[in-house]
Image 1 (cartoon, rainbow, N blue to C red):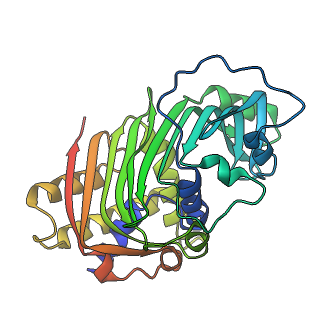
Image 2 (cartoon, helix red, strand yellow):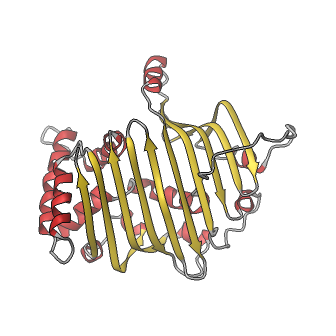
Image 3 (spheres, one colour):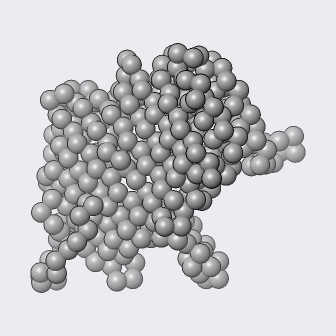
Length: 327
């Protein structure tokens, strides 16, 4: 059972563990770019004075302007056109336009933001034209990579009730006309009275429902599989890691783990769908969804996740519903 728990967590975890501390504050502080993408013409702005959004972005180390870069303040957020976000010294992501909105967002861009406030009660984010940007220093591979990229769009929104601590992440989605679509939604409970500062220092919550959906036309291979292969890599007897061997090993372990799940946790139909999805790795074509219901809610402490200390009882407490329709 412990093997089952750890394997399921490995396959359906949303991100690299080392990135989780950065991702959670980002979701809470700027989780959103509006789906209302229609705009009116921007008013003339005094170019001698930077807006709050542009002033703030000047101090973000992983952010760089791109060609035709522009930033505009809106009442509860920012509109950013043509920018680059670096994830390493040789790779990043270029974005045509991002719109970020949140309750009282401009207050958090001030020189002295009050981080002892509760989280904003709502937030939205919409991102258009996301492309991977290789920055190898060699013009030929960088150019080839740029023209081979199909642009993607992303959007998400959340609602937060500070009195109950209930946080609803609503259909955070990434989509591409060529690669398909993936989305996640979650019902989360934060400690009542939590502040932005306390959550940044010790991100703790409970999860009662998690849903992941994938309509795969290459998105899994382009994004999830590289992360999984890197995370799962183990040196072989030659001292080298073989990604194909690593994925095959994980596929076998995951299949055995699903077979070991008790009937009280997963129905026969869902078990069959989940096994078929795993067996189709590394190319799970078609539509897949998985719902995890936790009763009682699953405690999530990101410090424990980073140390790999989630217990078997925690990971096996969820009821699983899965659907897979392969093409």
